[in-house]
Length: 82
Image (cartoon, helix red, strand yellow):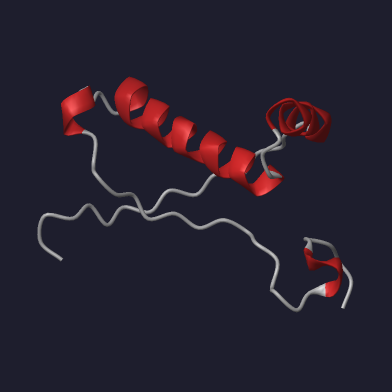
């Protein structure tokens, strides 16, 4: 695709679940909404601080992948049960 940066970036991290739960209780948001918001903020910071992009140069869309449970998965959440 012309004009599209096809570079792939992989990153793994750990996150204190109690911190996420504290945010969830205060805001009433779903955990997945909090995680996706964090992902967006981290990508924005990466592009601005480490890649030197200006605010106006940020892309309109970024394709990402995030683990989500299958709709028919037991208890409809991520776990190791089948």
